[in-house]
Image (cartoon, rainbow, N blue to C red):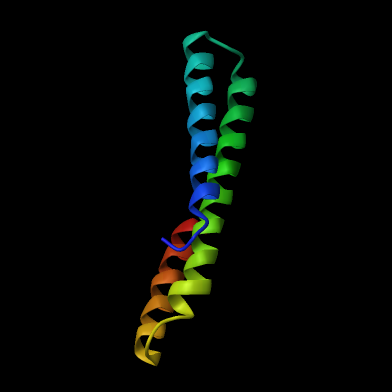
Length: 86
């Protein structure tokens, strides 16, 4: 992985902490809208993490592909991934 490993790990650990908090909120029968807000916050952190990983993929893996064919394969792979996100 070519992304900033420390940054990705920090973001993932943040999301994990948020999920632990959400689980506690559910166990404590907290207000649904409060739970929803925390879910959206966790999704935002995960989206930021994914953006970091995909940006690094473009900048390093695609850019450093050894041939045009390999580059095309990497681009197609990237497009399939973006299609799943959208």
